[in-house]
Length: 328
Ligand code: TXA
Ligand code: MG
Image 1 (cartoon, protein in one colour):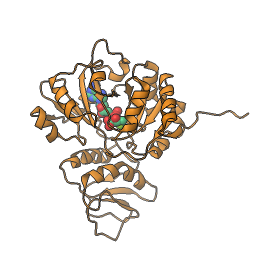
Image 2: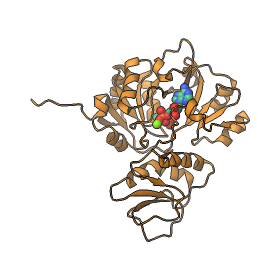
Image 3: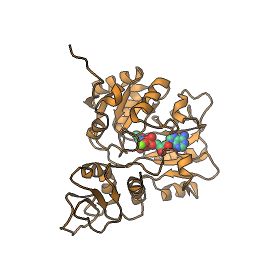
Image 4: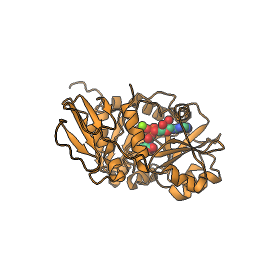
């Protein structure tokens, strides 16, 4: 018999059997990667300290960076956090969906303290993806889940990305990847802090500031303080290993090229991909992380990205691109 080290995670397409297995891994304190409409999450029983600690360990995530707790809906969220009128209004409109709410933690919340990373708040979200909903139902407990990537890397939008991030299951902690193809939205959820007098947007996503302001009135955009409020919004993030150059009209000879909209440059660039030849921001968001990964290859010295309009979902796309391009 040969000694075997940590094993790669098992990959199972979503099915009744796979959901049963996933629920049992979670109940045993193991980690399960699962699809959501935004990105794949690295899930653990949110009430189990050891399981939540395993998330931080597998990702190499700083312990001061809190986690999103996933729930089926408002009723389950109310056991964890204080849901005020404002929260109720946006929940009615946007849940289930890609909107995370930061709310005051209930003193008796059945949650590991580690999910809040020392804050007196909890970020809660009800995902819309049918596989995520089925997993929440099978598990029968809130699931803490950050994006299923090594801390600082590009978020995963397909099962293969998760497998590449954790070839040995993050030291054997990630037991199972629930696979259901590509994530339809492609960028992480909007994070809205409702603990202060004025709602604050901590992370732009596909639920836009305009949509939120229609319901809530003025929503502040977290600036420099976002790094304090949402410790995960460190400047450099979502980063491929190659340097990223933004607002490029055309690639240099040694660069890969990520185009957007009609792209008439034939010369230069080893590799070129187009986020959306028709200039559709939803298509671009869904392609963003997979294409950054595809261009992050040794053939190139860097990745040049065409300008993306700073409107609607473009705001979230540009936020992720600026972080990918930020000094490391
Ligand atoms: O779309 C998503 O939100 C995905 C899927 C899996 O749900 N999850 C995700 O998690 O992107 P993560 O951990 O990669 O990003 C969560 C962000 C981080 O910036 C974190 O700092 C912030 O939310 N956050 C979590 N809890 C918070 C809290 N109590 N207060 C302020 N920010 C918080
Ligand atoms: Mg993340």
